[in-house]
Image (cartoon, rainbow, N blue to C red; front, side, top):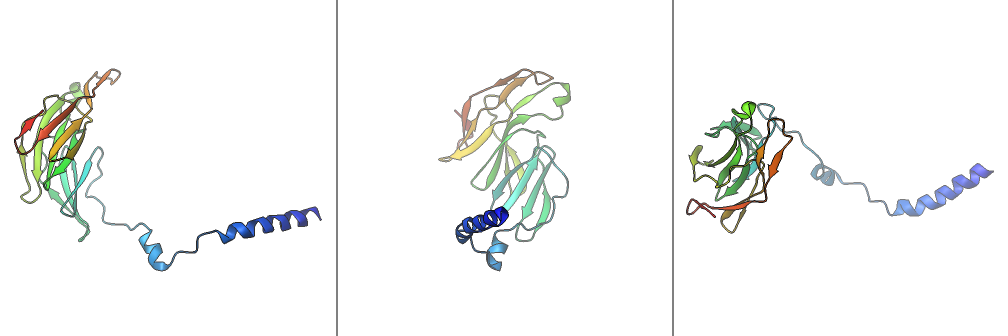
Length: 183
């Protein structure tokens, strides 16, 4: 008898809750709210940065630059950065990709060498151009475009070989692509 009362009480409480449950999705809604598998990148990567330009996605890291075309669901290898590196900042301005700062990956086994390098990639011509370097060499920076200028904020300016001691910075430097200058 006790089990019957408990079951009845449970059902009485469940019915009002069930009436607030969301209705099942239609097939169109289910398709819109689901994941679809697309073609994989040509190789496994770590530490890459991604940006979008003109409806295409660019995955850039120290040794490669891939373009993904969602309309065609395919990957194309593009010209890699002139200065191989990792832990850089990346921003898009006027359909060009700016890669700023970072860590020289070739020298990282001998200690840590941070860069002030500033290079811009033009997807329309598949070319890179070196611009005026950032005043403060650093890695792990954030780069964002505001009012036609690229703000490069924070990062690390020093770390020992074991990464036990690091110098994190609050430096904010601003790059003006129109004049190729920093403030």
